[in-house]
Picture 1 (cartoon, rainbow, N blue to C red):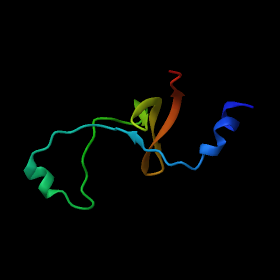
Picture 2 (cartoon, one colour; picture 1 turned 30 degrees about the vertical axis):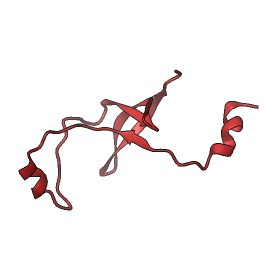
Picture 3 (cartoon, helix red, strand yellow; picture 1 turned 120 degrees about the vertical axis):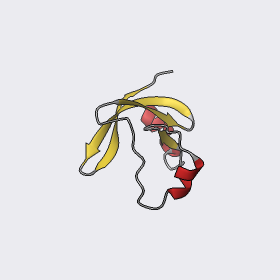
Picture 4 (tube, rainbow, N blue to C red; picture 1 turned 90 degrees about the vertical axis):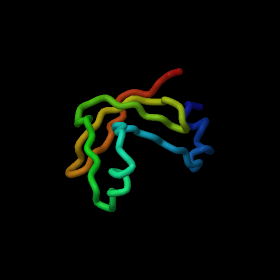
Length: 81
């Protein structure tokens, strides 16, 4: 039995996946001015490497990609440890 078959019964358990594009420091005034549709710029761009956390654990690496008019992440490597 291969590893995917061994964990198949766990396939429907939801897990949190976190992908952090950037961190910003904003004043309280700036935060209070945010509204739906506001844009917060990022210093990251397509092609840059990014960390992927699954269940709070660094589990993979990825690359920022453009998909039509949206940003996405292509998984490039899973950690073995």
